[in-house]
Image (cartoon, rainbow, N blue to C red):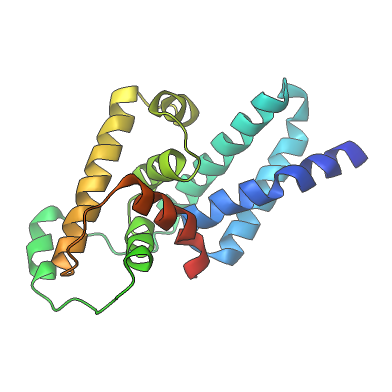
Length: 180
């Protein structure tokens, strides 16, 4: 049991961090991290190496987070046709671009949010993301392209003129969980 405790201590921050950024809820992230480690305890014999363990933890954390977000949506979704009416409302003043980006990332649907966080927070290549999430590489690239375009569009709608570059998205992805 001591070896398992050492595994938990070694990986609990990364599992919690990923869960927090996906769920944007500290209590939910703690619960999800606990579920992931319980599942690891039950399936420890299936883990083949340290590298496989990191892959396994990311995959299980993301899939459980996506499942939870599907069951308990935190944000009201609207169709693209209705988005024009939302854009006409006056935007909330928010002088900090990173805070605004983090909020917008938190509003993405679960799958695109997972792809964006893996790409810009975990710095994974699209092929690795595709393998981790069980998606095709084209689906991953599509999620990345659409998510970045949506973030740009929502920033413009909020009246924030900014070039959205990789560094800004990375900072916002890392900051996303600290806002709740």
